[in-house]
Image 1 (tube, helix red, strand yellow):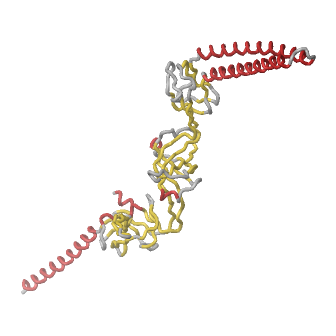
Image 2: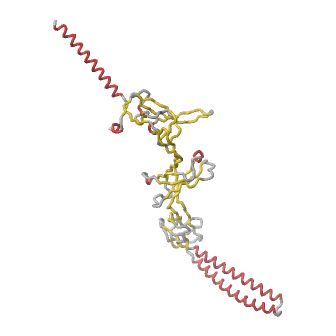
Image 3: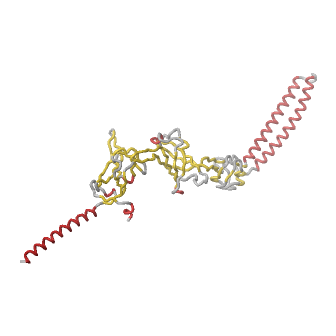
Length: 376
């Protein structure tokens, strides 16, 4: 009799144990199936409005220095990178022929002075004779005309000397402005060509970053706006500047306008010719729902607007509610490279998924983790 009631008891115990194990396994599997995500609380923030362009670094002032004399370069006084003062000699052009011309002009001036002095004495004597009625009017007019011709010849000789000396001075080419020798185009012994500069003199204490802005962006750009400049040579640094000039006309081919940003460069680390990336701050949006752009799923869609197909962007995010993912479509008012300003689609305080959203679908069970757990 005892065997008859022991067997049903064992079977019942095994059944109860099996049910308990099944429930435990189900809960374990469900927990393991949850997608780990990181979240932040939706809150109001501030978004910087900006426009980014690629541009070139240029010297604030760059002057090309030419030789007026097409002759051999006798000597260079400067090299690339040297600092020169205004009026300092840059190069000397061979000027033996010009020097000979100066001597000839000076000799001609001496002869003209002697001739004018001799005629002046004759003119003074003729004046006295004419007053005493000893000399006729015709004779006096002749002497007076000779005197005027001698004075004109003297002035012409003086002008010739000034011109010859000026040409000789041009043989010593000087710097028109103070600055750095940016480039030297010849070597001593080369023939100078008046159509090609000997050197360029640049002022680099401030530099210009020039870029072309589109017609759509011109309305947002103003002289004096803050600009942040980055160059590849100093990837971890930024240089502050401001818009200095906006071209009043657009290029008819590209429909773009030239814009210049002026940047202080006291240590001359920014070099003319560098490639630069310029971000111009055009404004700030305050007290808006700011969403990190990396938290969104961006899709490009084609819409028919006025019988024309246009490509627009659609932004989706996920929020966590009751441990499950809910997809939200955002109504966006502004987008930059870092953030989005959201008009509708999110409520303050909601848990926004900022990492792990790529593996989510509507209703997916999720597990909220922190950054330390995500790094493991």
